[in-house]
Image 1 (cartoon, one colour):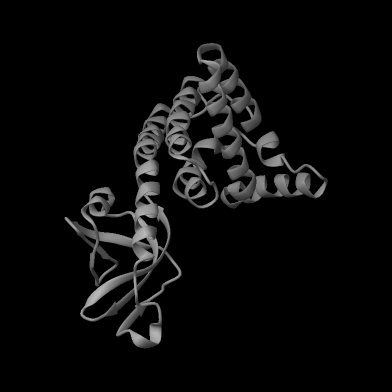
Image 2: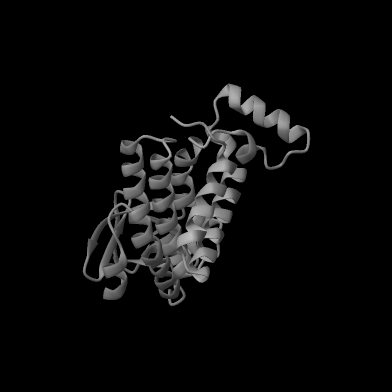
Length: 230
């Protein structure tokens, strides 16, 4: 495999895209890569082995805040994509539909480029490109679902856990385990939650949602909604 740092790889990738893209599209690529850098600075050290963690820590302690991308091998890029697409773009970025979609599109192009440069193998690139393609489709849809669920929660009349038969506030996202027209189920035994058809049309089994739910008057009610993780 070809050795280059993360910084070198991202710089070369953007240089090649600049030559082929319209200026407006290229600015979107730059924005996605900048966000990806931020994700790596924040969470990248979590994936390092002992040797690389020591190198990174020494550099940071000496004032190099960009040490993760400046020092480390570009092969670490693909290891960060799940964090970037599955958590960072959902939880840490106030992004519109276009930028959410672009995050998947740009990272799909990036992993393919890394394989072309012999930084990662083609099998790994194919798996990560499929993940990125899913994100380009699912991130905007999950964002719409989160907003629709939030609007539904605002109409819930039951907000006091002391007056409900059951109160679910896990603090961690719950998986969507079943979807029927106008109904959703969460976790092992929560549901059906009655929802408008446009909400059940957006939801997908396996997606995770940060929610507070109450059971009273023989039905489930949506009290609060956080993020939706596709």
